[in-house]
Image (cartoon, rainbow, N blue to C red; front, side, top):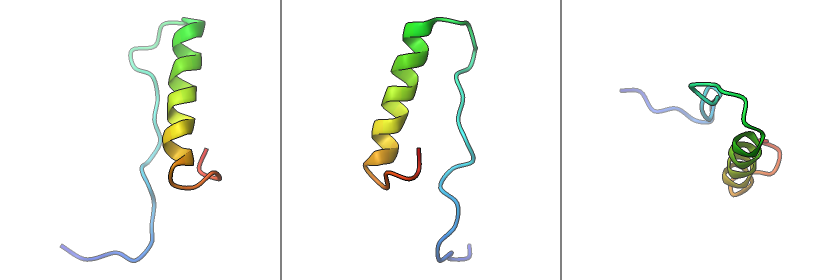
Length: 44
């Protein structure tokens, strides 16, 4: 296994299965933003 300097953090994310539920969407994006902000505020 090669070591990498820098690179990509993940390849994206989604809500699967997708059923429109506004409160679930808000919770998902709020939680995702908090996780990203812990590392770098520009990630979200």
